[in-house]
Image (cartoon, rainbow, N blue to C red; front, side):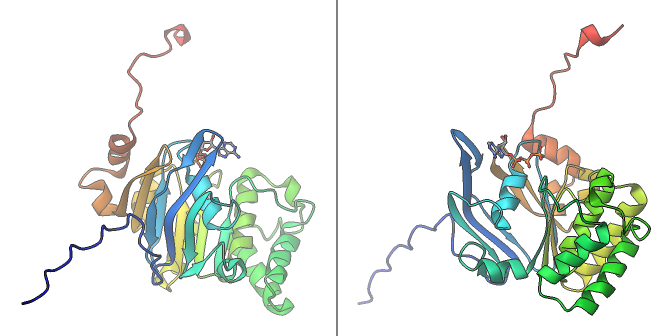
Length: 268
Ligand SMILES: Nc1ncnc2c1ncn2[C@@H]1O[C@H](COP(=O)(O)OP(=O)(O)OP(=O)(O)O)[C@@H](O)[C@H]1O
């Protein structure tokens, strides 16, 4: 007589990391005092995807990306890049990552050219290769003429673009970009989009946070929506938007539209 089948073990909400995913998050969480900034969730970013992370102000996007990139230690959970645990094998994981962080200060007493060069040399690249790539990056970011200007004197958009150049100089396998288009002019934004699309076409993976739904809908293959530190939806852009525009779906998922009662005192 055959043995009765045991019932399957309860499915863990956070199975082990997916080594084939470019980014695998498992149960990553962070609180600041009583405030749960990011509640535990799991997410896999497929290799070769252009993945958008969207959510309202204070949703937990920057906190999530900071834990993924080794800038902020999680209270619990795991983040892996191409199967490499970011917190257990940080050097290997960071070699695979290019990061544009939000609100992190640059060495802004360097010129733009020096800063990009410094980023490349810090990654252990040979000087001649760094020099060549620095000029290429300055050109596509439309910063060649400003290359010798100190970063402290850059505008917000120039600041963003030089940070992006620093994130790309070592040709990482995964780019994690927090609000890369914020304050960037439309021509530069279109150039950056072309570069990122090309990068993805050649096997790179981009994980990008943005508030601009239209941009995410046009640019990304996948999207995750977070609100109040919780994952509300994730999948391909078409799956998540389910026939609506991404903006309509986003409002459905996160709520928070005003009641229609305005600031009557503002009307003269
Ligand atoms: N260092 C900190 N100390 C205390 N609270 C923090 C800290 N960093 C973030 N928070 C809180 O955690 C929550 C998530 O913040 P986070 O910056 O991750 O949001 P976000 O989605 O990136 O927002 P935005 O779109 O406005 O940039 C917010 O409530 C924020 O106030």
